[in-house]
Amino acid sequence: MIRLLVFLAVVFALGLGFAWLADRPGDMLVTFNGYQYQVTLMVAAVAIVTVVAAVMIVWWLIKSLWNSPYTISRYFRVRRRDRGYQALSTGMIAAGAGDGALARKKTKEAAKLINSDQEPLINLLDAQASLLEGDHEGAREKFERMLDDPEMRLLGLRGLYLEAERLGDRNAARHYAGRAAAVAPQLAWAAESTLEELTERGDWDGALKLVEAQKSTRQIERDAANRRRAVLLTAKAQALVDSDPNAARTAALEANKLAPDFAPAAVIAADLVIRQNDVRKGSKILEAAWKAEPHPDIAELYTHARPGDAVLDRLNRAKKLQELKRNHAESAMAVARAALDAQDFATARREAEAAIRMDRREGAYLLLADIEEAETGDQGKVRQLLSKAVRAPRDPAWVADGVISERWAPVSPVTGKLDAFTWRAPMERLGQLIDSETDLPVPAIAAAPAADGKAIDIVADAPAQKPAPANGGEKDMAVADAAGEAQSIGQDSELPPLPDDPGVTPEEEAEKSPRRFRLF
Image (cartoon, rainbow, N blue to C red):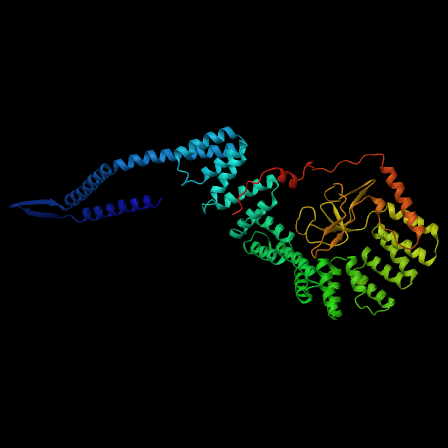
């Protein structure tokens, strides 16, 4: 476009020049070798322009002839390169479609037409063709050769990572992911795998640095990064409670600042602050978290924040929580428990019944049974309430990947995923427990390691093992009888096996397969 405009401008300038000469007639006299030549100005101008144009054309012809060998060779070279890239494109499409034979054919064709050192995609297509042919050993060797090329290093690490994942070699997979994350933290696959490794071994500071790198490279949004930091800081605080209370307090307060509605962070931050005799600040932390989302751990710590308080004082603190979050089952349950401790049976019964109306669940019926036994001792009513508790939905708990834990943990004991535990009520069916989100049977896991190395009590069984208030042998027998009925009903139907069960664990498969990865 610019050249066209320049050409039009030159033609327009020449036209103006010739028009100007035509309006001003004159003669030009030239004396040469004793002769005089007289022509008009217009003829002289046309002659000069013609001579200049002729010289330019002759120069262009001479230059074209001089450069013709290079021009011809470049034409064939470009044609050869275009054919190579066409073969490379066809091969990549074939590899994506799963056509290993065509991918291998186009790989050889592209390698003949294009130098593989100049086009790294040929190496990728070669490795992909090997994978489609089932030659995983050859593919791994090709990926390992890519590590020597700075331009191909990340691609090689990705290929080796996927191969290690396929063989179940988690150590090798995390090694390659760690190397990739150190070079390019914006890679999601590398960062997530490295984050799982760091959290698994309790390197909370390293995990925090990685999350900060993810945030700086805009791999994750700011809110998601703050949530992850809050989870990691809470886990760090849990790990440092006994060894370094001051560092634990700092980490917990920062976690609570990042996620004020995160109950585990609020509980541990308030607990550490209260231990240092700052009850007012701890109470404010708990009140803010309670307003966001009531949780029984918050109510328990809030009502017992001052060990020297009388039972009536604890009841008043529970009522204060209820004022902060009215018409909520947890608020009513907190007041009912405190009222039972204070022997205020009327208030306890009223609040427990209100909790049942708002959220019918097992814990409210068990609490109402405790109130009935403490106030009247009527075992008939107690057994009736316990029977209702067995059939009622379960109380909310920390659930992650089909595991139900009574305590929060930063990572899932099954998959190692960070921030996997959520506070919700699992669904139940006769004879088995179902995760409400995944709709999968809950595995029977007895315990899982916590951040501080202690065991996490995990409840993952059928309704027969629901907890009952330890207030007498008859009550325990009533719960056992009611649960026995429910269990006997479900015994006739065989439980379906867990889905996604490969029969052989990745660890067993990794032990059977030879180690072919070079961790360098």
